Image (cartoon, rainbow, N blue to C red; front, side):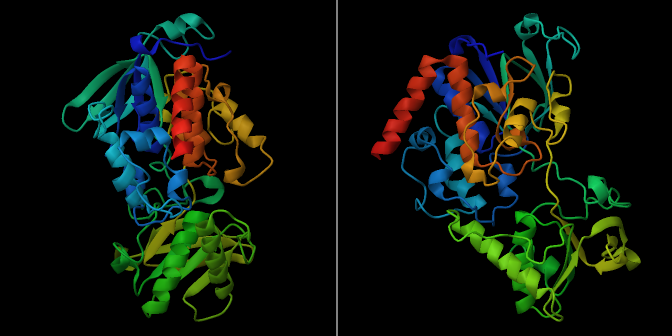
Length: 425
């Protein structure tokens, strides 16, 4: 069933999340005449702020839109080919975007949406019945300044991302024994090893769990710190058993990604030699985690191909991925993929892609964004579920496809003008 077109000037639209895709969707909606509200649990770009020291793989030109640049009143905030840090991206682009005339009164920070439902309609009501879409959405939120409050909308876009929901590091993705009790001491997000968090790592032993790009980022930082500060070391535990876990491409258009892969592989190979500050435990699963002596540090029990080993560490950093928080739309009819937990139609399209490179992804169209719940859409990183190949460019494509389907000609005209202006500049 295709997305039904609507009249934006008679439609209340709520965007949940003031990150890159939430703000892009809100800006487009405001330009098209929707009555737009953006509800953000923290501050604008708060997820990016949590790893503000990390340089993005993608350059400035890939992370902005013509409409966004027009809204902030200028050209690119930085060198076109340079990759900004996450903090620079928020400071120079997202924060000014939230202050632009179209959005400055629409964005409500410190307002966490805890539930979305249909007015006087339960989850099981009107299954497959168009009457369900005639009822407005009700959003329950916790506001820092006003306490619990409610909002009403005709269209809801969930752009909350996944960074607030780290996965557990135990076998099969469940919590390791003892992990839940120690969760507030384990670092699941990217620490600033060489900057803000340096004191917690220098001269200390760290257990690092995971083998993706976040793990590579922290590994490389810990390796550099170990070379500068005696006594600093890292034990890198991975499910994978390949000595060099990454496969850098000489022709990778994202130079920062390739550089990280090369350095992470070098650290992994270094771990095979003693006294380098880096130790590798391959084919490992964290079975249990307990406090160290006198409740200082940790002792982790790892299952390995050669048996169980115990690792004592001052820090545990678990970079094991993130997952979407489905509790927000628990009362809605959302069809999720059984493997990725993303919206089913988009998840199926992503599973059908033949290339593993995120840059090779094409737009999947508005139909892939549709849910059984009329006019409720999940965009951005959360739409990919546990799939980590999301790029901001893909999210902007989603915004374009969605509003073109919702509004038709006015949206097509808006995007066409923006693309022409971008090509001229």
